[in-house]
Image (cartoon, rainbow, N blue to C red; front, side, top):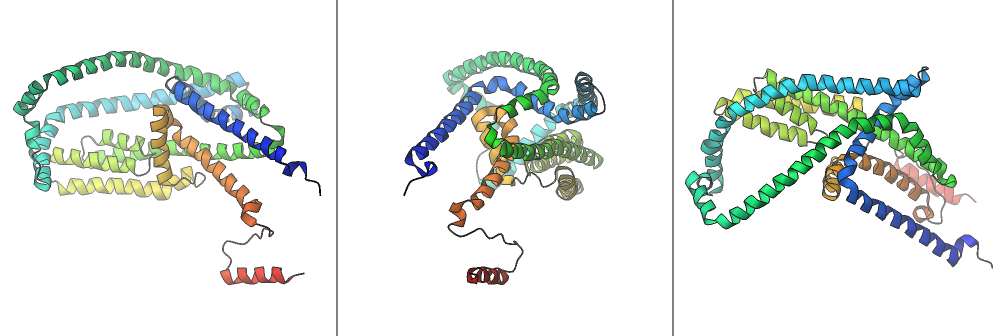
Length: 393
C-alpha cells in the first residue's frame, strides 16, 4: 500500500520547516517593532488617520473628483475639524487650569487638615508627620549624598527630556505630512500588499481583511465618537451642577473612556475630591449631583452610545481590552498602547476564524461527520436526531 505525498514523512518535515520559517519571520518583525518603536509612532498615527479618511476620499472619487482633489478636500476637512476643536477646547481648558491653580492652596489645606487625619484615624499610621516641613528638611539633610545623586539624576533626566521634547515636536510636525501621503497612496499600498499574498490563500486573506476592516472601522470611528460624546456629557453635566473644575474633569474622563470603566472611575474620584475641596467639607447635594451625572453618562454609554455607534462587531471583553493596553504599553511603550486595541480587534477576528476552522477539522469532529445543530434546539430533540441518524443504513 503506497503512502500519498501529503502523508509522507518528507512532506510533514517540509511543512514543519515552513511553519518554523514563518514563526521566525513573525518573531523578527516583533523584535524590529520593539527596536523602532520610538520612531514609528508618527507613522502609525498617520496611517490610522489616512485609513480613517480613505472611505470619504473614495466616495468623492466615485462622484467624479480626481484622487488628488479628493485627498486635498478630505485633508482640509480633517485639518478644519482639528482647528475648530482646538479653538473651542483651548480657551475652556485654559480657564479650567487657571481655576485649578487658584484653588491649589485649598487642595493642599484639605489634604493636610482633612484627608490625612482621616487616613490616620482609619489606618493608625503617622502620616501627617511625614509632611511636616522640619521633618522633611531633616530627612534631606540626613540623606544629602543620596539627595545629591538624585539631583544629578534629575538634571540628567531633564537634559535628556530636552532632546525628547525636540523629538516630540518633530513627531507632531511629521503627523500631518505622513497623514497626507498615507491618504493619497492608501489604495495603492493596499493593492501592493494584496499582490504579495500567496495565490492559494487569496480568498481567506480577503475575507479576514474585510472582517478586520469592519471591526477596526466600528472600533476606531465609533469609539472616537463615544469618547467625544462622553466627554461632552460629563463636562456639561458637571459644569451645570456647579463643579468649578467640571469641564476639565469631564474632558479627562471622556478621553480615557476607551478603557472600560476607567474613565468613569477616574472622573468620579477627581469630581468627588474637587467637590469636597470646593465646598470645604461634605456637601451632600453636590456629591449626589456628581453621582447622577456619571450614572447618566454610563447609562447612555451602555444602552445608547455604544450599541448605536460602535455596535457589537468588536466583541472584546473588558478584561481583554485592559490586558491588551497594559501588555502593549509594557512591550512597546506608547506605541504599544496606541496599537493595543486595533491589534486586539484584529486578533479577535483571527481567533474567530481559527475557532471556525477548528470546528471543521477532524481533530474536533473525530471520525464522525460534522452535524450542524441549531444552538437553540432542545437537548432532547438533539439526542433524538442523532439516534435517528445513527439508525439509518
